[in-house]
Length: 216
Image (cartoon, rainbow, N blue to C red):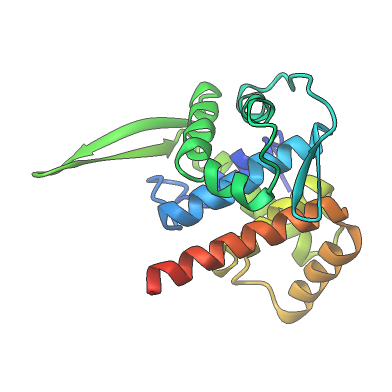
């Protein structure tokens, strides 16, 4: 399996959630925002800057991460230190902040290019991958490892959890059989740290609420 460098968690999720050629989103804007919000918070957990427990965010290190997107979220958390509820932060970042931060980071890395398509009454912006193989790698990597029954590293386990939480599994894991899905759920249960399990769970709940709100 040919590999490419592993990207930050939210970048992996963004690429997984878009068509690898035209850059069309596989998710609604609301679900995309919630998924990326959860992923950016997950990056800060992986950076050991925060913990998640009992529905609350616990700041454990206020040093910048060296990554502009993750540090921007950390700075916001520090400014609004009296707010601690995970669901509140997921909802707040999902208002457009998370998508914008990730699009900018991918653009700076040269992995996507901004394209605007004009219509009669409006225009639509797409972030089109510059390399379809690189864009498709996060989904391919996770799906292949699961299919082989191999262990995922922690960032990829979080990515797999967010793929499930956002409903992207309908696209990414469609070829997995019952055994493969069972192995994935077993890894998520046994190997994903509790703080990240909780974060993925809150993201999934937020996505579920957003779906119900659209149907109401």
